[in-house]
Image (cartoon, rainbow, N blue to C red; front, side):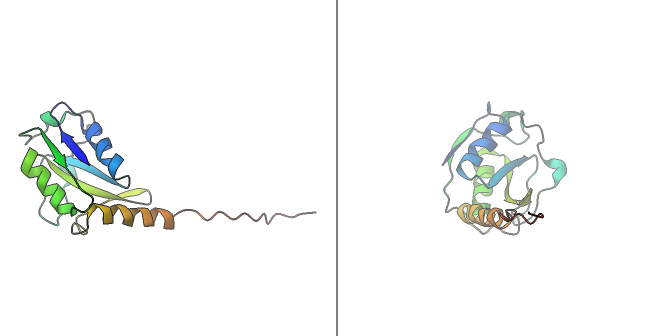
Length: 136
């Protein structure tokens, strides 16, 4: 996928573009970097989804980025920081919550997405077609 980091794009637009390619993953932008295989401090998360990327602290350049499914999570995070100056963290869906991928940064995006999909299938509520109510 090609992810364009444009100063005129909003956080939400960029998140949606990433999520279209990886439906069980999402990205969040932060005003400070996190350590390798470390988590990001929530107080530095950009929570205004209408915020323009160009207004986020650290933004240095617009850039079209090619993000491939075989890329490791940490590689994508590092590439975005090096090319654009923005700090992001990739999250994986697990049921109804989003997990920070800091512990699993060595997995590829495809592996992260598949792991979340497997969790989604596993957590589907059991539908019992039987009706156990009293019957005549």
